[in-house]
Amino acid sequence: MTPAASALRRPRVICHMIVSVDGRIVTGRWPDLGEGWGEYERTGATYGADAWMCGRVTMEPFATRVRSEAEVAREHTGGAPREDFRAPGAHDSFAFAIDPSGRLAWESNDIGGDHVVAILSARVSDEYLAFLRERGVSYLLAGARDVDLSLALETIGARFGVRTLLLEGGGRINGGMLRAGLIDEVSLLVAPVADGAVGTPSLFDVVGDDVAPHRLALESVERRADDVLWLRYRVEGRTT
Ligand SMILES: NC(=O)c1ccc[n+]([C@@H]2O[C@H](COP(=O)([O-])OP(=O)(O)OC[C@H]3O[C@@H](n4cnc5c(N)ncnc54)[C@H](OP(=O)(O)O)[C@@H]3O)[C@@H](O)[C@H]2O)c1
Image (tube, rainbow, N blue to C red; front, side):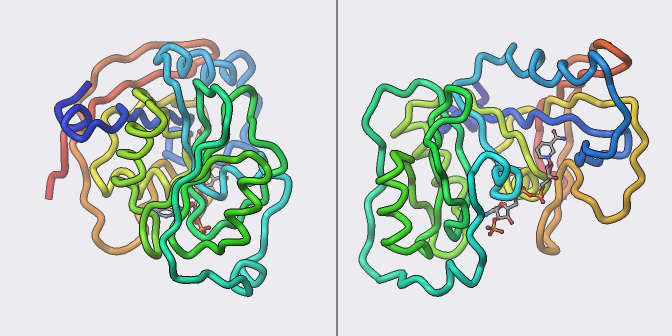
């Protein structure tokens, strides 16, 4: 564990992604990678992580329904502080969804054996929290308007006991975690694909104009199936 992760008692965070050679991450239009596709899961499994995390957009296919912004805005948010909720049951692996305004209408609290935990801001309504409790979806509240990612990770460590977390996109949540200095390692599967689609999500999309490049230290390079490269970097820090 890096000094940063141990000092904060947050989990070790590995940003694990498959990218084109130009750093783009929307894989739907890519040519078939054959055995190469399986390398994402195979290499990810080597970390022995007890959790993974995605942004709201990436999580949408796993939730049954996505609530519109208008639907969310109609709800009364109240003013009293609310408690985090850990659903009953023995859970030892977790899927964390960063969903600041409560857009995801979960049908199930399980994704492939991993317990779903919503990470919310104080903007969400009491009705939405009651909906999550009724579905057995755990949640934690971190931040007033945006999600406070540092606080969320500390709670993930303290309340859910997570030690190693795979950050699995998309670009905006990766960018937010990078900007907050919360990524310890970058694990990249570089696919033999030149994408070229202007304006599509990339590995790190930092929202705002305070983008600070980070220096990475190369840990290892491996050639995997069907010309996929696995690159592992340690994150050293901002260069500006
Ligand atoms: N190649 C790969 O390995 C890989 C892996 C994962 C995803 N993807 C692709 O990535 C694309 C989605 O990427 P994306 O950048 O559009 O979306 P994303 O990062 O999945 O989700 C963005 C949303 O997450 C919430 N969010 C992100 N950062 C936040 C922060 N710092 N604080 C609070 N909330 C935050 C916001 O939700 P609200 O809008 O609700 O506020 C934001 O709109 C998809 O096409 C997916 O297929 C590729």
